Structure formats: C-alpha cells, structure tokens
Length: 255
Image 1 (tube, rainbow, N blue to C red):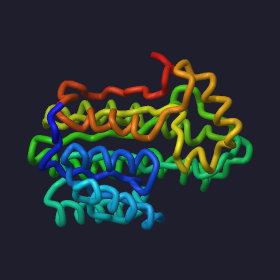
Image 2: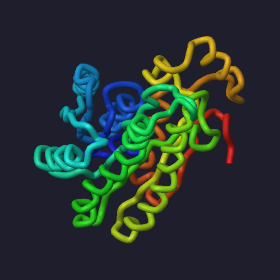
Image 3: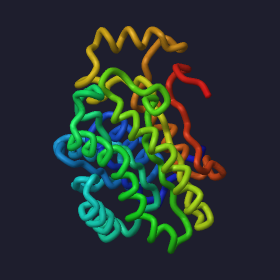
Image 4: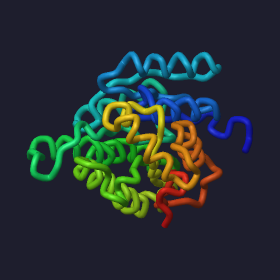
C-alpha cells in the first residue's frame, strides 16, 4: 500500500463522533484523505475526532445534521461539496439500536425511527452524493451493516436487525446502478466490536465478555480493525470489489 493512497480525496464519514465512525475518519485521514466529520447530537465527539486528525497532520472539517431527514441530508452533502469541493468517498456509518424492544413492545413510531436511522438514511445519503460522483465518473461508497443482519441480533433488536439486513440488499441494488458510472458500492458487517457507545449502552459488560469468549479468535474486535477494512474498500486496493459485504467478526459468522 502506498503511503497516502487516498491523497487528494475527500471523504464524508457519517456518525464520526466516536467508535467505528471516529476510527474510520482517523484511518482515512492517515491515508491522505480530507475528512468531513459528521455528527448529529454529539458535536463534542466530532470535535475530538477532528482534533485527533489534526494532531496526526491530517485535515478535517465538522458538519452536523440528522441523516434520517432528507432535507438535512441534501443540505449536508451540498455543504460538504461547497466547502471541500466534492465527495470522493462516502461512508454511511451513522446508526443506532436506539433501545431494546421486543416484538410485542415495539410501537409504530419507534419502528419507523429505527428503520429511518439505520436504513433510510443510507438511501438518502447515497441519493444525495451520487449525482456529483456520476458526473465525475468516480467515487466509492461503503455502507454499514451488522452481524445482526444474519443472526437477528440480540434481545429486543429485531427492528435494528431488519434494518441492517436491508442495508446489505440496498447496497447490492445501488451497486448495480452505480457501477456503470465508475462508482463502487460495498458494505461492511461488523460483529462484536469493543470500545463503542453501542455496546457501552446496550450490552452489560459481563454479557459482552461472555460473548467474546465464544468467538473463534477468542476476543472482540476493535473499531480500528473495522476502519482498516472500510479504508481498503474506499481506495484503489479494492478497485474490483462491487456489491460485496465483508464480514468482520473474528470467525463468529462465516458464509
């Protein structure tokens, strides 16, 4: 791999206030990209991500917005393109379980919220970023799915699992549409990843460590390990990968 394979590229990473999003923003910057660090509610997290990028000699700009709302996504993409010139790499990382609810506990409004944040937002972001990529006949998009897409998720996570399953199918469908325009769309599907707000909020530590012991590698993953796969897909090293979903789970799920 060259020292800066993403030099002169502009990357938008949604949900980059912490965890996998932050690790991805840092990794893309390390590989030479100028990074648009997106956040919704956690501006302080985005600021910390940007400071870390700057400390490593990289370039980062912070952008806010609710990616589950079409008008805000269009404004976000337009703002990034205006301030940074274009979007070469789009990483649709924003998403959340929101809360654990069983089938009988789920309300229509909460169901829609989970689906809109984890699936509809990716449609919105891809649709908004695609025209400029098509015009330039280049660009890469990496969407975030989850092991939950394959195993249904943990207790009370069925809506999240459904959304993440949809991300895989959506990625394949969009990949078919955009590949003739020189744009590659792929997907990553992390398993049990440590040091994220997701598990910090929704998985008791004892439960987390018990699951980690069942993984063939004997441990949970780290956000940086997911970030390196995303960066691989974003750059020319993954130049012939289209519509693929890469499982990042230490052997927890094998296709």
